Image 1 (cartoon, rainbow, N blue to C red):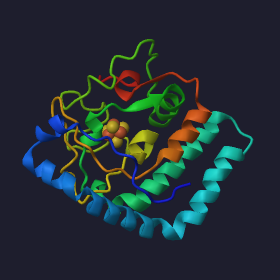
Image 2 (cartoon, rainbow, N blue to C red):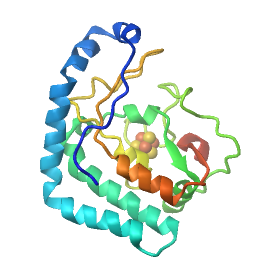
Image 3 (spheres, rainbow, N blue to C red):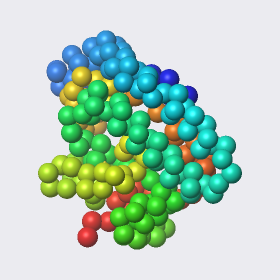
Image 4 (spheres, rainbow, N blue to C red):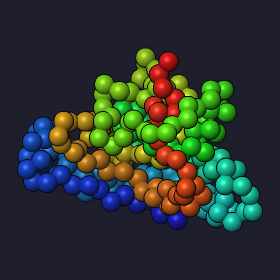
Length: 213
Ligand code: SF4
């Protein structure tokens, strides 16, 4: 697990790609080079820690413990990976693009976050925020006025694992009716373990669990 690698990327159709702004189109042609260099930087940064991370990753899956305890450990490990590699990636620049996307959180994780931040998550019967209605008009509840995460220590797993291996945040932008592909560090194995731990958990956007007050 945790081979430093580029996650599989969505690609826009030719028609949608031609609608993207020129700087974005130019940058997309540089992804093979930029992303390879980003992954290499992440690999070099994580190399001294990899054996320990791998050991803990396996232990989380094999310890006899309640899924919620394993979830807390998985979150901690994801935070550790993020702390190690993010300073070497585009995410180091402090952009808050991801905080305007759909932020998918399981009920168990919402409760864990709620316990940590002393705020009870709402009961969500029917999620209202989903993959089709997020956007710049709807920032995450926890994004503060300075564009920073106000619960950084307690942020969801998904926020810890979305890491842009490009040279800067140019590709972190939402363009109506267009998909701007962003080269990501491959953290798929974490998602697989999360899905195994909490396979029947309710999933909703963080804004549904914790609406803006
Ligand atoms: S929890 Fe924090 S990092 Fe995650 S989307 Fe919200 S503001 Fe951004």
